[in-house]
Image (cartoon, rainbow, N blue to C red; front, side):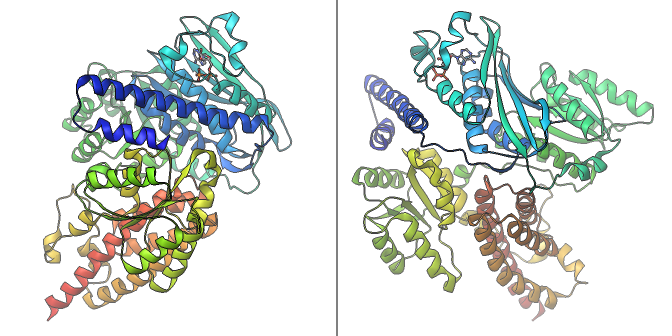
Length: 638
Ligand code: ADP
């Protein structure tokens, strides 16, 4: 499949007649469908053969659900659908269950809901079902859509394997007819049941229940949060009623004082009135996309009104596009969030805004990683025994101007790394002689003495999905599944390889010249850092030197803690790094370290590897910049 999909992609990038393009597009589409079918059948047969076991672990429901929804949001927003999650306040957050399989069910149900809905919204609601029995409880999930609906006589069959409500479904919407069958089995394994309520033309609600228990290991994080936002007047502007209701419910649960409005005009009037009463809103959550005046229009109006200008504004947008983020920054908004908003993100954004820390939270990178990395040329080592895949990756790298050295197994990869340096290693997992896990472990072993770290990206098949943890444990930095999708591969490369263009952009000038315009984020603030040291440049140099050594150790510790799933160690080492970065007023490094620290505190490892790679990148920029200032400090003195 890798060969078919990859080569079709490559051929589509060449000069073609319209007919040829159409044929190849059909090849690509059919191959994608076939791949989905193969993956579903693999899962299904694993369940049928009793080879699939649940893997219950401690997890946080709201964060987990939030992350799942983020992955589905793009599809929903492309169709102009709202996607929202409502977790009732009495649903406990710290649970024991299998979050991976839970996610699979939710992805399938929400994926279907998006697929079969043209207009309106898709909402997932989570409630407690019945009375908890000691530490055990049953959760009730409901995914509703406003889509085409399912005729009554078909509502029973769709849960069977290969069944679709309508014979033309595959042609019109794609799909294999296996998703619900797999979900049914998974739900059964979780001690629950699944059913549907639906009306043709109105929409469907898929319900399922699942048994979980309360976690004894995860500490609740809500009580401290409540204290912080107590009594805070917050205005919510959103044209979607479901979103308004959810925001209101969450804010009330945090004991804030939310007021909801459905349009920019109503919001503005409300703000003026509140100001006149002497009870101004401190924070406004603005939906970016609204009819008539949108979020930016409203923000502009608020900014221009002397009574309201100081209100903290947080933009909530459905696109994670860089242009929206940079516009928020330009306008000096207090925060920027993408939909569907995770509760923890919302809390952090509001807390940061009222804490007056000034820095917009949860900003996506200014440019998408692939944009930022587009122009750089990398040296890539590929360890892969399959000649089709070798050729495919070689072509992809060539097209992006990277240099590729291909070897056939882990032993050869180790040899190549001994002879030459590479910016990144793409490592197949299953290879003759020496596989990817062992080769990576040996690379990491060698690096212990040199302090270096070459990013290794694992390439492995969907059937081995459970191997993700193994990849990270073996010391790999990231993971892409086969068949390789070019965009995913390049994005992954960008996320793990420190960006030389960013490093190079550290100004080649004297420290005082770096009073950069407020809009551009400084790697660190020399003046502020120096001020903290009473202007002692010598001490600054000494501390900068210390940081350079210490950060290497801490980054390694972070890496190990993620590989070993050691939440305490992750929290501790990220915390130390955060503290050290703060000593230099290094905003970006501090912010990323803080995010990781939070993940450690919450025991949340999903995506921790990506954040850790980001941190490594930031710290590399910081140490480079520090070394420059150290040297220049010396020059200035002499
Ligand atoms: P697939 O979506 O791959 O066809 P599923 O097992 O997930 O397979 O779904 C089976 C069938 O149930 C779909 O083909 C469709 O006819 C129907 N169905 C599932 N979800 C919805 C929904 N939200 N709205 C309308 N029809 C649905």
